[in-house]
Image (cartoon, rainbow, N blue to C red; front, side):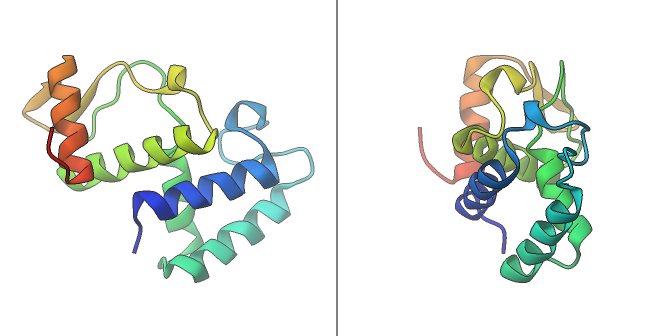
Length: 130
């Protein structure tokens, strides 16, 4: 099962092996002759996490690549996954805070654009109290 801690460990290993995302040659692969090793890494993460496929692992990584401008995730599950992946990616040094979206939504009917909204969403995702 994916947790923020497991994602953080994955992103730390990703950075150690392939560098931070800003050094990658494409958005989907590190390039620089490391693409086969990247697929092997994702396969190993699939086994370690119990993910259903390599694609599921790559989706976790994709959520952690940051978003230019605004982001809208239309359901709570995707919003939680994206926020957890972004948190893990920043903590691991895969991306920087400048790579985070300007605007987040956790419900299709509610757009968050204030610090209070973001703080509330953080506490919802991390199951903590403010």
